Picture 1 (cartoon, rainbow, N blue to C red):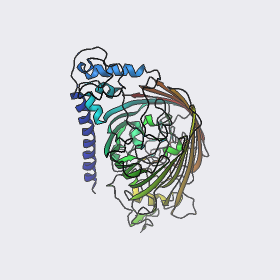
Picture 2 (tube, helix red, strand yellow):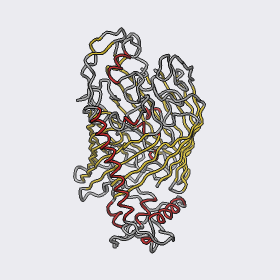
Picture 3 (cartoon, rainbow, N blue to C red):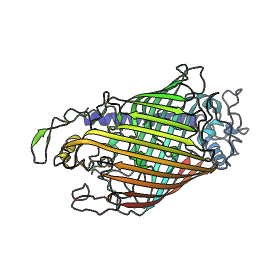
Length: 576
């Protein structure tokens, strides 16, 4: 596909995505009629009145459907801010299944996370103050019956760091790197502005087929972490090859179908979605803490494909997936050229000739076991089985084997633990004389935009390993969570990443990290997450934008860097 064709395709996708969001929001707004100024509702979370047809749902204040949308939204937001932690009602789940393990607020989830699907047997719908305002409007009951919701958040953040050098926007090092997402030290930033339009299928019932969709748009500094090569990736850098501060992405755009009569229920998701394993996720409200673990930062982020989730019974769930690779658009289909120019200036045969650099069919499989009590869950996954995808070096083309374990001690304490091992075959060896030239033949310049993500060259497998080798890395993270009340929890995270060959971070070393975080809700409308983080590396990876002479954006400058880093950071999530 030509560059111009790629640009046209991206433009069509952007227009379609933003257009669908705009049309959905406009549909909600057009249903509202302006009048009056009094309080709109008494309890917007109250279930709909079955007798109602097209008016406001039950529980709304008399006359609320005569108010403007803005007046109702102000009223519903006041109600959300005034929430005192009392449960609004029992969550819905299938009879005979385990009760939900957690509650939100304050937790980022109610059931132990399982990727690529709604949690079958449990109500997965979500709405915030905006939907409460819409439900109390003239077509509120119709909106509620449709199961279509619109919501989002605004997520500013800041950090104070022992690191002080600039973040190198050409090669992705320096500043707070490899910490994420607050990579720029001693600054404030707009991490995410997000808008969702979705319909969640009813996966509690077993009577009828149901369907759903999600379209999620994100703008801010965090968007650079979810962008797939070939999809808005031209927005990741400016004309000088620098990573831009703010960008946009549509990390999720998918359809779902729920088939209740396949075993205990089957959900099929098709489109672009968050990669299946992981405790954490890209979107701010889905995480315990503001910053991310090293484990999460350097594994795959999004997939384009199809994942089928089958609930066998209340204890066992199996998943099969076919996707097109990690963080890569379906139409990005480049291959390794037959030859390249080596360090001596000679044209030689390319040892990786013909290998796919972009989209390629990649199978995956996961199994979730949930104990009878629901207090324990084990979730092993294989992302990248070597059928169709040979695990050769390409754009983020890792083979990933991952295991997650969740354990609830009691109503106040629980623990989440994850470990993975990843590898890529035929990775260009940057310690070999011709390694950088081989890498350049695939992706341009050695320090091209993408920073530590995507097809990073790394710092090599060793001078005696030949021009290519198998790059490897492993990581483990553990969260210990204490919840003293309905609006607060504390999180202690310990984290290890061993970037054995430096392919993920550019430094072949072992990293350790510890974070203590407090998560506090103002009502159920605003989340505050202050944290303090300390980390250590075996080499001077922190505060190091120019680790070697000739590094992009550095010229002959070489920085000493540091092996330690301490940060205080905080963000706010303003939900709507």
